[in-house]
Length: 522
Ligand SMILES: CC(=O)SCCNC(=O)CCNC(=O)[C@H](O)C(C)(C)COP(=O)(O)OP(=O)(O)OC[C@H]1O[C@@H](n2cnc3c(N)ncnc32)[C@H](O)[C@@H]1OP(=O)(O)O
Ligand SMILES: CC(=O)C(=O)O
Image 1 (cartoon, rainbow, N blue to C red):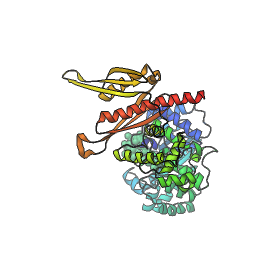
Image 2: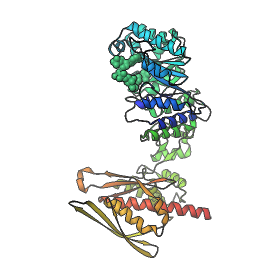
Image 3: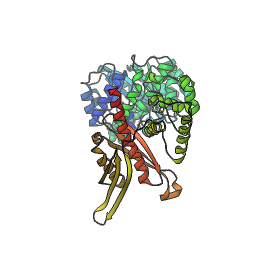
Image 4: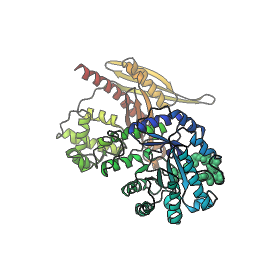
């Protein structure tokens, strides 16, 4: 059961529109998730609209479930607005959370232990009478059990005897240890005969471990979120839970082919949630199968099992090799093959380029984040590059006027083939002016440049103690309709570092286009 749209949306910085929620529901359905918890209709109009519209989605696998608490103390289910909105949400499944922990009964609900049991019973039996499948989430089950074992068991028995189809044990505060979970789950199984689920938070960084332990001990429903989004430190990350269960433990969670969609789904949901995807996320992160150390790459080239716990393709991810100051010849070999560069590996040039990369990284260049600059460097080292233009000079003027803000203007002189071009352009800053002047100069020769734009510009000060004289690294991301590529520049002068990255970005675009055309012709 995926709860990205409900508990995931409780994560700091996550806000999904109705449209986003519908698209995520369809994506989770395509992945093959059995239950999608879509939200809490009694909470806000967005979720009410979602439940209205989700009924029209043609879902193949997923049952959509709506969430709510049990009725409030001292009111009937018919009088409780939350329960009534839940019933009108139009789903066939409802998830209800109720209190297990006596401390919560006294201090959060401010009621009695008996009334809490009645709230659970009344709510579950009412929803069953409405013909709904009911998942009962026992909030704080483990903390409740530690505080008062008989009462904790009584709450879940109340839900089961009222007809709950599932009882989910929750580690709501996320501080549980796997051994504690096994022991308590064992006790629950002795006194409850209903399918058990598990819902854990990640405050002790153990949500995945606890979830796997619960499944090993008999839980048959897992609740979690894509990328582990969720309240505080998040929920059990389904992108880790699913491959561990399927690939390592032999359980089936998704229909055939589902596992291989996991990386795509994880990135898609990050994108819609507007959250940068965590590169080191196990299984689905960009770095999950990225090899940097020369020793690792050497061995992986011989047999990937040497440094990979599984084949990345099984979860739809792929192997990457990074070239940096920690590279050996093996990194270069792998990268050259990937980039289609013809290299004599045992040649002095290969050793020379590795040395050059290490020296450049020592100066502050960073090629693992700037693969386009690396590709150009390798092409140059092996005589396979082409100069599409050559800089003769540039000049930048900046003028601050009292009433008119800051004006930046760049003048640039380039050689393209035998012709010399001289142009000027303004910009809202010196780098923008330089970028505009460079494009203006080149557009008459390479009109395709119009389709290219800068999509990111990052500056990092490398040696802060030198204050304004410090070396800076500029990383630029350039985009056309098809792809995005990154380039790097390093200098004590921010304009020079920007120029290096800018000109590499444009050169790479031209190289990409013309090498594609050359290939098509041959
Ligand atoms: C463990 C979990 O993640 S549970 C899900 C948590 N998610 C959310 O809270 C997000 C959605 N929540 C909301 O939109 C709002 O909190 C609402 C609409 C549900 C309630 O809003 P309000 O009526 O203004 O109440 P408020 O949020 O201040 O307090 C929560 C109330 O629910 C009560 N409550 C808490 N758990 C339960 C429960 N299991 N059964 C019944 N009532 C409960 C609390 O005692 C408190 O009651 P009080 O107002 O009498 O003190
Ligand atoms: C139900 C729920 O979200 C929790 O206990 O964490």
